[in-house]
Structures are given as C-alpha cells and as structure tokens.
Image (cartoon, rainbow, N blue to C red):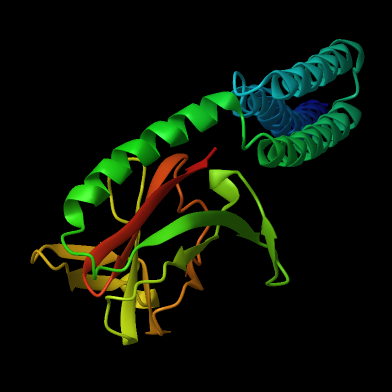
Length: 299
C-alpha cells in the first residue's frame, strides 16, 4: 500500500513537471511571435514616415523653387499662379489620402506615386518658365539695367583706349546654352541649366592699326566679381597693355586685314550649376588692349 502511494506521488510530480515545461515552451513561442509582429509593424511605420517626409519636403521645395522667379514679368507671375494652384490641389489630394487610407501598404504606394507626380509637375513648370525667360529677355527693367551697364562700360572704354590704332569691337551678342544628354546644345536663359556661353562680336575696320595676326582674349566676370575660367579647359591669364594680370576665359587668333570682321568665341563648363544667376560682364581684349565690353543676364 505504501509503495503504491509513492508511485502515485511520483506520477503526479512527473505530470506537473511536464505541464510546467509545456507552459514554458508556449510562453517562449508567444513572446517570440509577439516580438516579430512588433518589429514588422515598426518597419512598416518607419517606411511610411519616410515617404510622408519625402512628399512634404517635395511640396515645400517645389513651391520655393518656383517662387524664385516671381516678379520678373506679369506673364511669368501668371504662370507661377497657375503652378501654385496645381501644387495646392496636389497637397489637398495628399492630405485626403493620408486621412482616408487605412491600409499601410496601399498608403505607402500612393504616397510614392504622389512624390513622382510632384516631381513631374515641378519639371514641367521649370521648362515652361525657361521658355518664358527666353521670350522676356527684352523687358524694360532688364533693358534699363543693361543700358546703365553699357554706358558705364563705354566711359571706362573711352579712357582705356589710348590711341587710334587700338582695335575696337561692338555689337557683342551673348547666348547661353544647356547641354543635353546626347551632347547637343539648346538655348536657355536659366543660370542653373547653363553649360556654355557663346559670344560673337564685330571687330571694326581700322586703317591705322597694323594688319596681320591679332590675339583676342575673352574675359567674363561673374555677378559676384569673380572671373570665369577653368585652366584645365584652356583658360589662363595675360597681361594688358598697362601691365595688369588678367584671367581670360577663352582666347583665339584672328588674321586682321583692316576691314570689319565678325568673331565668335565659346566658353563651356563640364559640370552642372557652374553659372550663378545675375549680370555678367563681357570684355574683349585684342593684343592686350580693352577693345569692347557688354553685359548679359542669366536668371
């Protein structure tokens, strides 16, 4: 009888140990499953937060980038009003998606699409702004600024040209170009898109000046006063007739016959956004003498 009781107690003890082990295993499984669920959820939330931040930043950046061109002309302001209205529509659409969509995966996909749509809208209006800037080069305000610059440069030129034998240039024409992915160039008026400046001018007839080869230097000065040039692409410095060391952007040699002739020179940058916006001073030197000057504005 005593032996039977001991066996019963031993059996009950074993049962309790088995139950305890099963309980421990179930608790560990539930804990690990819960942890995995939390981690997965946190990853989804993190991705969603990133997409929301990207969309909100793109909205803000697009508005600010377009507003930089306000105040230049009435037709450009009208285009900007149209652009901002579309951006506001996009912003309302994004807000509505955020408030209505409950599925995280679907919301994430829709936010990514909205980001792509915003970037496309921005690029579309930047292209249209560029076209308007090209058409508005002759605005009255810009004409007044250029006239003032040319008058000032003309006075400086008169004091610099010492003798009648110094060659003079006039009708300086400047064009700015954007380099496309295929290597071709298209004209632009926007500083951030400019890769090349093309400058053409007339060297006037001069019966006194000696005929033969003449060295022409093109000096371009940025709005901030820094000379434009890259020694790795051919730019260097020369001395003027007064002994001043001057940085030139490009140089060429012409065969002067005493008659009027047209000369064209280019300056090109390989990298993007190397031309800051503002008014550039263009100076032409022939054999070390200042021959002519003009100005050009990039928006």
